[in-house]
Amino acid sequence: MNELPSGYDFTELYEKRVRNSADLSVILSDRSNRRGTGKTVFALLLADAMDRTEAGLTKQKVAISVDEVLDAYMNCPKGSGIVLDEAEQSLSKYRAGSSANMAMRELISMGRVREKFIVFSLPSSSSLDRDLKALCSWWFLVQEKGSAWSHALNYNPYAEEPRTPRKDDRWFWDDIPEDHRLRDVYDYLHEEKLKHLNGETDESSQRLTSAEVQDKIDKIKSETQTNTRNQLLTQIYSNSGLTQQQLANAVNLSRSRIADIINQDSL
Image (tube, rainbow, N blue to C red):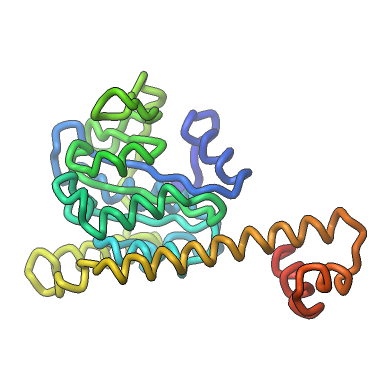
């Protein structure tokens, strides 16, 4: 899957989010809570197809912990696809009050102009934090290895679960070939999961303190606000007839800084 298939409802939603420079969060689970049905492969293929960067999906954009996802969200370029595999470990509904869950909820609820596309992969969607699930827009439900139904998620304030009014499209995928660049990403993620299962990772490093959560969120908000400001400045310069110096004087920035913003936004 080098690109999303045309004519599918999910593809249309994705393209709309891209036009609006908005984030998109997706849940991927199995109908019988099974493992080994190709969810990780599909998560990587889906995130890579949504990724709009030159490098595509890389090791830096896949994770098995919330702090890694937050770091990827902050540090990976605009248009990146991101995968959180085994999401039930970090974002369980039984840990709704944890700093990790709160960090992800705030991240997704504020995601507007970063254009990041996050896939949460887990055996059962019922184990995911309910409030976080309500912020996601789409759900892929694996039926069998290499096949999944696609559902739009509509928030229902009167029920525990978002409404899934109908099955939209059936999706199919193959395994990642050995010579495909995503094979290295898959192998890396597999090794990270094995280390976690074998106790070779420091679990304390995956638990964010309240201060760490706030610090990461503040950084993301600041970066988002800066991007919004830069977009507005570029629009004003392009449509107002003001010179760079006049615009710089109006917003208390140097002319060289205005030039950098305009040149960067045009890349």
